[in-house]
Image 1 (cartoon, rainbow, N blue to C red):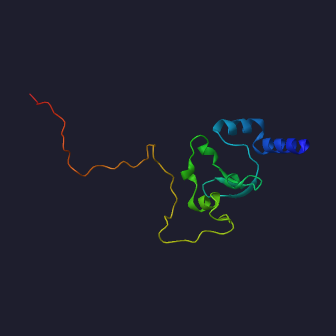
Image 2 (cartoon, one colour):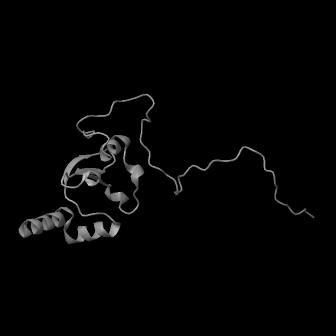
Image 3 (tube, rainbow, N blue to C red):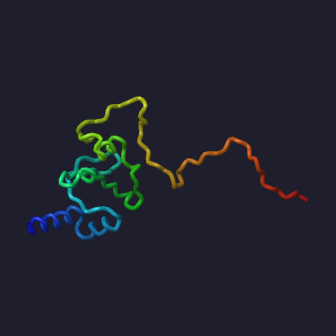
Length: 136
């Protein structure tokens, strides 16, 4: 039992990138997990599965390297979201999603809180206008 646990410990360290990689994963707030690579989406995110974990924690995503500190769940495309949240058992690498007319062609991440966010403008006139000093 003890040799099995130490074997899994060293395997987890090895698959997490050694001591340095494990340190950086823990610093980012991630868990050190080992699992089978199920697939990769067109954005470079990698998806893993390990059925030794309980149901809500057995599938996870590792975001692409250029989003190392700045990542969120909107970077996951809808077809992989279905698989991550156990809505379907088959990943999109095995069963591709059915194309539908109403689905957006290209998945976009959420730009809220960034310089790219959409800021609507008001089309109604102001009720209160600011005072402008008279010109002499």
